[in-house]
Image (cartoon, rainbow, N blue to C red; front, top):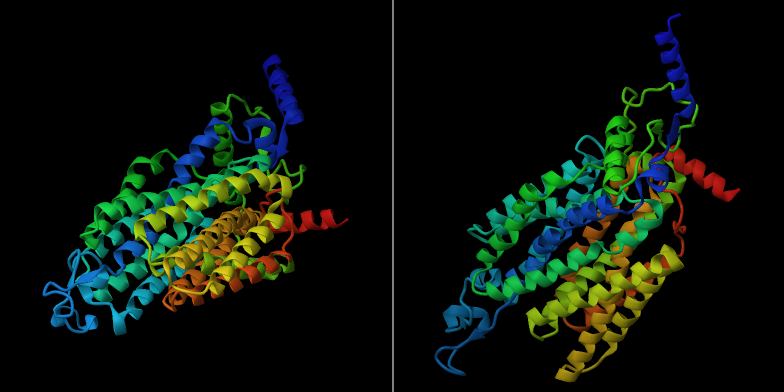
Length: 513
């Protein structure tokens, strides 16, 4: 054998000896870095999509508001306000200021406001399930987020052209279909490249973008009070800008690549992460799923069948089935309270724009608190505590008598504490739910929990129209029941983020030994 051939054989033997197969969590922890410059940049770019979801969702607070009316002929000279212009009444800011003013959605027609808002969230419920499946399958996390943002922009702009109420409702349904999945896809894409010890802390900052989006929306709405149509245009264009200027610079999740058996692409992303973080992945390192042993070096991951799961696989396993049912119920109750308190500002009879900003600002300390306490006390205790805090204060708000200015302010304060607690829970549930399910079905499972959240959001506007005190009672009961249900979920702090169903089952058996 020639000298060159001997050297080649020696190199092959040496390479085989130094080759090592690791999971993505191990690759991040040992080589690429858990949360460095690459992850920070990626997290900010991807999570910014939450602000877009806030614009498309909460725009209804301002577009569907009921503006003040006045009687040009003087006090007492106009007829029934429900008759509107026919009785001599006019809208202070003009009939184009909101959908309520333009289409006369007052008195006996007021239910149509809640109906339009509920239908929007119904679209989100369907969309969360559809996009959850698509992002786990061929579209991927980035592809699903791209499609959702494009649909948001297109249908949001078309909503501004609605000729009548029913066309408006139809377009809000379709917009809700895409909007309901933006946060879901963004959350998973932003957090999957982060290492296990930093994932919880980073995830807690996700909702700052959503709350920030609400605060920005209040400012935009204050500038465009005279035209709800222009408000829809201004809140829809940022989604298009995001697609063109941000998403091209975002990478697909390496975990999605790996479960789709595209190991080379997953490793390429991890090498980019390591390079940007000033680190290096050794040449002999390859990736494996968490249900694969180290003796499968002969298998070529790029040619193996795709490891893809569905919601059916979640129900086949008792472990994930129980987790899903509990997560669905908890998300449902959480959403009823969160969206209910957000929309209930119209019943507080205070300045609408200031009330919305106050609520959004009240959410931000909640995210900081959970970020600081998440890895100290764990997901489960925080989930229980924040839901019960919100439920108790909402219950107190329902018991406050009277309708004078002081009582309204006290009730508003109870609502602020309530949204503080439930915003913390809402944020916490995303990371908690993501850690309860393996990569192969993570988005499908989160799609179900998001659907439950959308169902809660559907109920929220229907609860809001019941008056001032009754909604607080409903929110209080929902928060307390939700907090009690969290008792039955397992703690996930410092546990692996599993890739496959088999890996999860094996991991749970190991923990029980």
